[in-house]
Image (cartoon, rainbow, N blue to C red; front, side):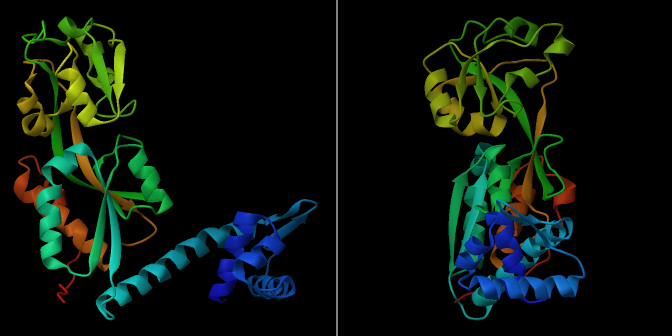
Length: 317
């Protein structure tokens, strides 16, 4: 079985046409057909089904395509690691960060990574759930640091818990209910949804049932935390945000934490990556830097995050 044959199966899966697959692979259609027949003889089963509208993968072809994709990604990653480690070629990395991860971990983790590793261009992407998971699955980012709601991991992702982030209810200091001590007092207030539905910034997840009231009606939705700060500093709105975010950015904008005594949810911030592709050299070192920062900077770091991934030797040019 040759690499070109694996690429052939993936091309057929994507294009549904032998002619289009041959064009993409820069081979003639007769040569592609011959290679396909040789692969079917080796596998001992038909890999494609011909239809009036083109071709599609047979069951055996679908199984092979799933494994072929993983194998080719692994080989590409191995090539990139070799280029970085041996040939000193420049590598590129992309990491997606949630707001709380960007505030608490990114400055120290990125500085530590850059001090240990040279020849790497790092791109930081603002990525909250569920965008972060979509970017990992598509290969647009190598790693994501942020919350992962229960039931959203999937078998294709690996999540390593780093630390727990307490959520707090905030408002501007002049809000008429700034002294409220119970959620029931806030059910009729104007609330902001921060980020996606079901995420840490969704007020519906604050435990209104236990407080004996219905969840409040959301009056405003904000995807950007910078927009949230601007809106809340000039209007009587309530929102739930990570305490670290409030301490770093909210208090200078005259936002305060309400003394709510009801139990509020705690968000677990995790390092998330693909399960079918081990992290390469630079990306593994980047993860180590975030694990280290969580252990020594965040007071609620989780013990299971301590070991981290296996160490790699530093390479300084």
